[in-house]
Image (cartoon, rainbow over all chains, first blue to last red; front, top):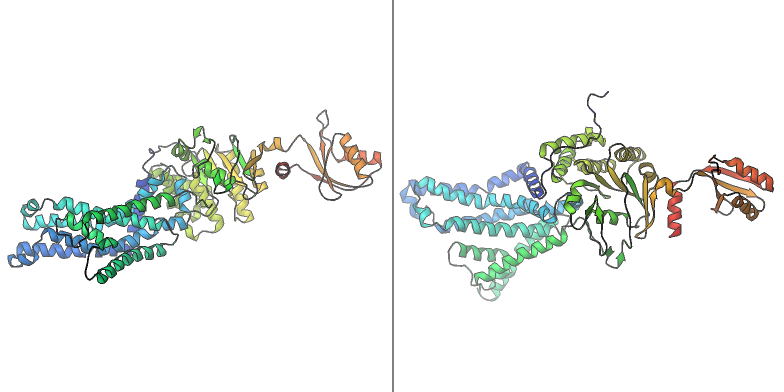
Length: 281
Length: 299
């Protein structure tokens, strides 16, 4: 008689309710990603600006002579998110390019969608992975910076005077992160090669900026064509969110519509591309 | 089921019995499409499908929580070890993380990957990848298994082991399964029922033993003499004759009316009585191949 029967046994345990698979996908993806040392290094670099800004805030609150130069304003936080855009770009490419492309390469969609989960859950799970890491280089450090300011000055005066900063940081971060997440996921669903997807994403970003740059030069410094550039649209809307004068002459609703349109287009691409079986007609 | 101008399934009415059912047919017959429709991957343009008593269109998630699917193509989740992959599939199917991990170890031992369970799946051989696909389909203990060409690309030993596993699941572990294959011996060894498909239609269906026909023995026969006259003699004696090659025919010798088995001696006796010279006589057992050939021939 065997000590332990290694044959197949029926399962009599508990099964969780349907609709939570996206959490499984997200947590597995996050765990798998943070095991990569290169990525941890990248994430750490994404916090360098936070450390620099925190030091500046400390100096401004402890050395009054530096205050005129280093004391934070609403623009400081807007500028912080603007500069974090570089890390948004890098993290999006590093994490996002392979999210669906690698699954398509390995025919994993058949495995996923043969389990009790909807396509929307699969997409939500994949989006949550990228969303989480992008928030860690945008919203989390920006909000922490706000708390650091309160902590170092020992006063709520700045926060009270700029109460809109909390929702502004949240909305601006969300806009930046959601746009990057869905655009990248849509591109990732179009190919089986993560490298190709990365090049495509960078290409779209730089190409749209280049077109705007060309129009700017041709029209002799007219910024009304800024809606052609993805990053310019984002900057334009974020300026408005932070109650700053918009940097381009394009009306901000136009820029916002372009961003919204791109997100909707990306979702529509995902809806078509994420299927359990590729139907060739 | 229509893909563009191609009708992949047409006028299909079938009922899969409990236990092990083979879905048999040549490549392009519509077997995989049938499985993918039952999974809800593709929606039929007309008609209705139900699995385990649930409507495929109305309750796809409930159905998928009770079935396991082993796809035909190489399929895995990249960057994972075997045990992590199978446990992950268990969690996706609703098992708690601890139970999923425990089941992953168990099913990996069951499919013969116990020693290789900490290896990355991308380093696996084709045969091992087939086994891991079976493991992920089993981890959540489904009531029904869909196996799409499970022995594809396996060496003879691996193939035998895979068939043994499938047979064990269907006959000893109380798991109903649908095995899609174009390999007759695979279906014949593992299944009790069969559905034969051809050109998107059902060509034959039923228990294999029943489809093989009444009890009796089949012989390959070649004679010297008046062939047509001897065929009439055989038919007169209640035997069935089908020509295969130019001068070789298959003769079905049914059991006697009293149920007693008749054998080659009945043919020899008739040949001696009617002056025919038997030049070749080889016993043959009715196989699923006969059912398959007959079903496709009738189509």
